[in-house]
Length: 308
Image (cartoon, rainbow, N blue to C red; front, side, top):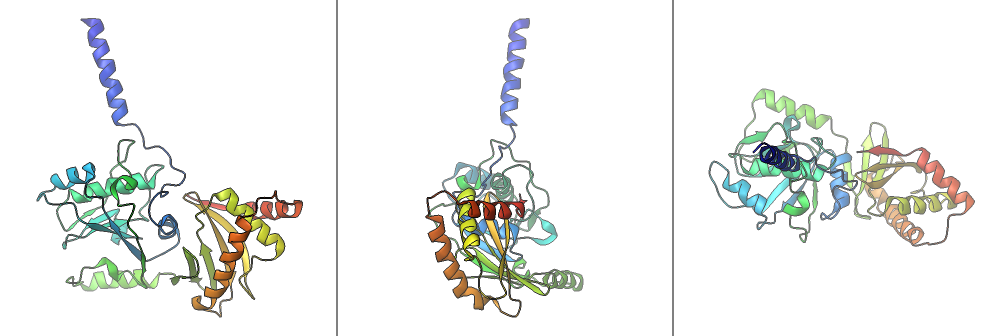
């Protein structure tokens, strides 16, 4: 009996450990999602934007969450991904039934995709009008967004000049809330999504303007291509511009250019289109880097930062 009891306790402990295994680290947490580079942009550099995300209605985890709600219903067709929500909430189930996820609310594990999925499942089980002020700790058993979203659907970034998108159409703010919203709007760094290349964002920070371009390619290959362009002097976007360096975010490389502050975003559509073509050509080169290109690469790496 003693040995059997100990064996049963050991098996129970093993099952318990399996249930609470931590979420594994994911170097590219949004890989496999539609518009991966825009996910990274909205998480790292864009102040106010949304994307409408179609759900996979047949996902068992979604159906279970909806069934657990105070008023069980159907899995919604779409949810709204937002850069940030009021009070930095991880999520919000609005009174009109809209589910909103806050992408910049932070990550409690090494996998933001799994963290966001945990928030989504919690929100579906809440009554409308409820925020999710704290995120549930995701584990290895928690589904990822890749398991819950329709991966075949096309998504599009909707940019905003302020955070008024937080509000439902029928919401009226009191004086304190209006002042808070105004303060948030005034803190926004003007940001424009260019059309010349996927996930290229122009922004104005004080008296300076920059271009940040999230690249979907393997980080090492993208760095090699930038090094080739830098060595050849082909890495500028015109007069009074220069490549400052690059940073890493969610496993992707993000080169940053200093721009002419007297020019607006539209002035860089054509230069960015030309840069996109030069970069694609450099990326396609298979020869080893020359000594000069290796030095250029080392210079880029010495100025490289990592954002999550």
